[in-house]
Amino acid sequence: MSKQIPEIEESSKFNFITSIWIVPFIALIIAGWLGYQHFAKRGPEVKIVFPKNEGLVAGQSLVKFRNVPVGKVTKIHVDEETDGVTVVVRMNTRVYQVLVD
Image 1 (tube, rainbow, N blue to C red):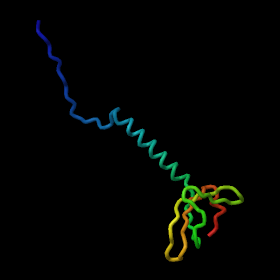
Image 2 (cartoon, helix red, strand yellow; image 1 turned 30 degrees about the vertical axis):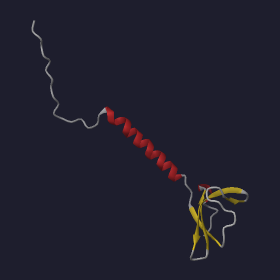
Image 3 (cartoon, rainbow, N blue to C red; image 1 turned 90 degrees about the horizontal axis):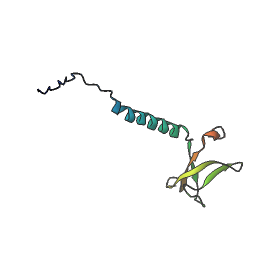
Image 4 (cartoon, one colour; image 1 turned 135 degrees about the horizontal axis):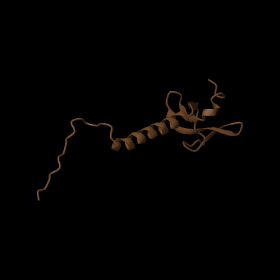
């Protein structure tokens, strides 16, 4: 009784697209789509200069138009050129028509 040793044929070509790369590729596509949606839904950023900060809090204070929230204060910093404060507001995307220069 002799044992037969199976012959193994080595592949000379490298198959770059294998099934193991499908999952990371799909995850990359989903992450790209979610990133695009996030930045596409962001409204314009508006800078407003006030002589002093009276009760505005970054991340909490809202900008209202006709008693409807249309934006949120994101940053507040001292503006040394005008001796006041600069308030950065992220507006909603749907109120772009209301904004004026």
